Image (spheres, rainbow, N blue to C red):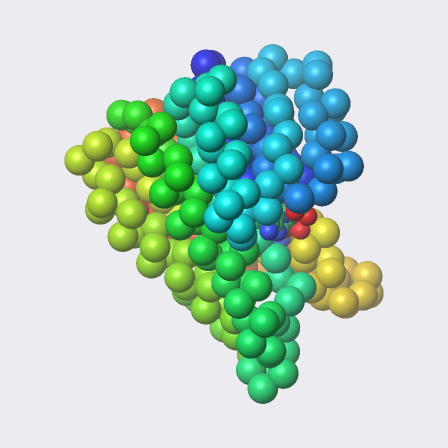
Length: 247
Ligand SMILES: NC(=O)c1ccc[n+]([C@@H]2O[C@H](COP(=O)([O-])OP(=O)(O)OC[C@H]3O[C@@H](n4cnc5c(N)ncnc54)[C@H](OP(=O)(O)O)[C@@H]3O)[C@@H](O)[C@H]2O)c1
């Protein structure tokens, strides 16, 4: 595989596993995140893989950093085959709306939604026929609306709508845009959200199948959606939750 794959939020959880999965298959992966320490560790851990992972320290919520990253990497890679917009936070703007500050609301939207606009816009010229974009939303964007996550849910609903709109915009250029809506996945973000190990374990076991999803189960879905096997899937919001939202 000679694909150039960008994964935002590659320094942890779903993004980290997805970056590794693509690199295992031989892709040249550019992994973005803010943590230099975790990014360098990811790079080191990819040395044995068929492909490669190169870490770029980028805050995707800041347009100037996204722009600088694209200008830098395009001199080497010249194209983007897959863009997985995955970076996200859930540890700000939690609680009833009255307790969400204006700044927190902005920070959450900047990272979870506006970053996709920055990434897509700055990468636009590097997409080719058969490029694929996959955006990471969540079930709370379209199926479930916890009262403690008003801003997070609203931003994720925005990710779904933005993805569908982009799918139409790029259809003629044969660039497909899909969105995934994962249910609970065992990552640092989810563990933090549940507050304590005890609460997390209770929720984990109450899942219809007896366990949350794993980051690898999401990585495989992203791989499929961005592959030729999914050539007729465009503008789709794929719920990946092991049946969590059925009851
Ligand atoms: N876990 C779940 O249950 C679940 C369910 C549905 C959807 N999701 C979505 O899945 C995505 C990944 O979440 P996860 O569960 O894997 O969480 P995670 O383990 O906390 O990973 C989040 C990643 O996003 C990166 N990130 C956060 N803010 C960033 C910024 N401003 N610029 C660049 N990178 C940034 C983090 O890297 P740095 O800290 O290095 O910046 C990290 O690599 C998120 O969009 C989340 O909303 C998660």
